[in-house]
Length: 200
Image (cartoon, rainbow, N blue to C red; front, side):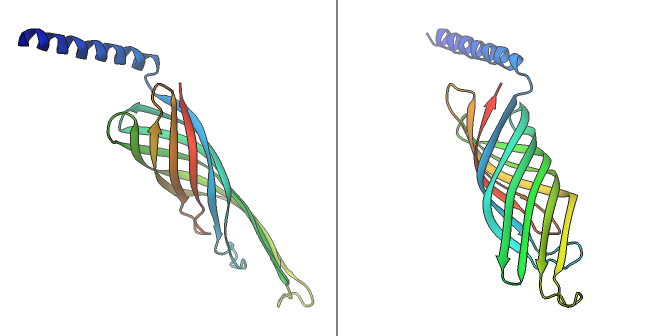
């Protein structure tokens, strides 16, 4: 009886592997796309000329992404993130800033409790665009006037993040909660987001 049970178990395992191989052949690279929304933190500590007096404000942010996961523990993503626009306004001082980035990441996954739950971390390069302008008055170098300044620059910076991903059973949809940040000399923008991805 035991050899029959063993043979049946082996046959079932081989059938499952065969079905898995067929499904994998349909999408050998594990492509997916998605997006997320959440709370960003836009920080500007100073401008390139050190004339900026600083901004640090929470705001609405969003992102879209495209990725692949050819093997369970490793993947890659390309992403566009808009951290939002913030402003500061009071008598004698005004400033506003907008930060957004395109980025590419390598991702490492840690599956937990079967195929439906992953922890993951990511690291890569972001091309961070920062646009800011403002005015401070009275200005010590412009008698009876305001100091007006502004800049628009793009920097290549280190970017990183971590999150948790839940795969919804019998669908191609996953739910993500993620924190990401860009290491910038002007201030480190970040985004805490909730999002969805769709595999195909």
